[in-house]
Image 1 (cartoon, one colour):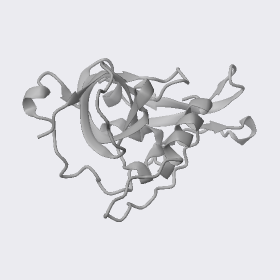
Image 2 (spheres, rainbow, N blue to C red; image 1 turned 45 degrees about the horizontal axis):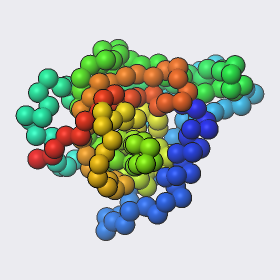
Image 3 (cartoon, rainbow, N blue to C red; image 1 turned 180 degrees about the horizontal axis):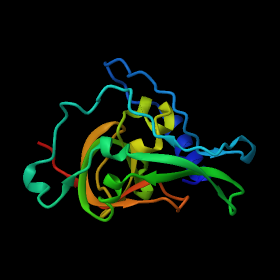
Length: 199
C-alpha cells in the first residue's frame, strides 16, 4: 500500500482520541513489517506475517444472523494471516514496499462471496472510507503495529447513513479481492460490502 496513503490514515486515526473502555488494553505486538524500506536496508529474504499474539478480542462477540449470510462463506482473520511478504522495488516510488505472496487457501477465496466480523475504523466517514480490523484501535495496524494482514479495506455498496464509532463490532458481506500491485489500496479489499445485522 502506498506510503502517502498510510501516513494519511495513521494521522487521522492516531490523532483522534481512542474510545474509552473499562477493559485494560491488550498488549501491543511489535511487528517486523514495514511499509517502505530504503533500498540499502533490503535483504533477499521473505518473511511471514506474524501470528497474532493478542487475545482473541472478537471471541464471544455477536455473529451475523444466519439468514443474512446464505451463499456467503466465512472469512476469518486466521485465513487472512496466510500470507508472506517480500520486498519489491517500485520504480514509480523509488523505494521498496512489502509485496504480498498469498497462500493457496487465500487465493481460493479471490472473487468469492464472503462475510467477516471485526472492529470498525471510520477513517473518513465523509468520503465513505472505512477499514475493518482484527484488533481494536489501540492495537490495530495503524496505531498498535499489528501487521497489514489484520485489516480489510471496505468498498461499501452504499454510503453508510448513520454514525459509526471506532471499535464498533460489526460484520460485512461482500466479494473478497486480493491486492498485490495497487499501492493506493490495502492488501485485502471487501468489495460491494454490505453491513450485516448481528444476533
